[in-house]
Image (cartoon, rainbow, N blue to C red; front, top):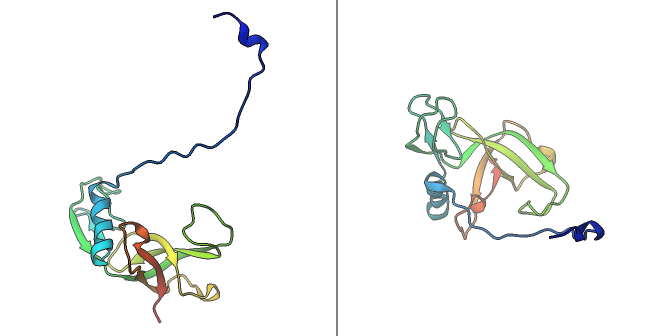
Length: 153
């Protein structure tokens, strides 16, 4: 092959490549998202050994590693465990800032769900406040079928 490359200066072109792909959420994630889309219902999954209820649902328990099969309807209401207000813009964010995100522990759930907060005055957000899911009118089968969680007055 020779040593021709020793006399050539390398050309470097910095770029980003976008590769479209399809990602499956599996059987558990599919059921969760289908219930959101078709019925406006939020389901968790309970561990029969630990009695923990996971939201979003998962296939196995994080505490005892049991396989999970018992679906539990949680309802749309819960309490805000913690929150943050984002002021910068990012392509990963579904709406323009400023935006509030919270971890919501739905009633009957053991874990929290990270989601947007809406219809809310940023100065009045408090941990522990009661919130309720607001669903989009036209749902497509993703987590943003829940538009946001709003305070319960």
